Length: 97
Image (cartoon, rainbow, N blue to C red; front, side, top):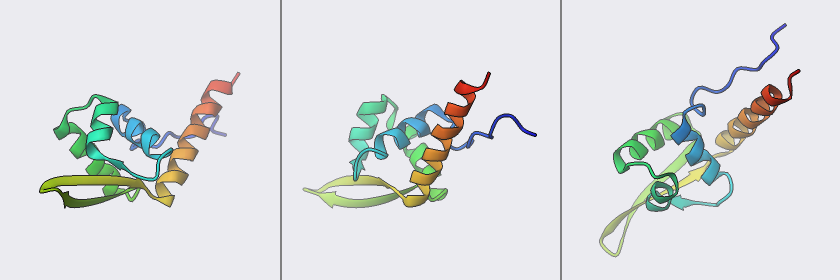
């Protein structure tokens, strides 16, 4: 019997986990806010958001506001489930004796 649950490799990345941690507690967050909170470069953050979107963990909408591009992210139900499973698995790791 396996003692530890597998950790979702998509969420095991520090930046992707940080993005999901932000999105789990808000309705939506714009790209600039996420970049400021994580301290990531725009290019790296864009790539990681793309991976989360491709997996169906987040939804991304792009539009213009006052002639400036605006990217908003929202966690999906699947993303919420996977995040909660990840946190639960981490708790199991910490509580094993």
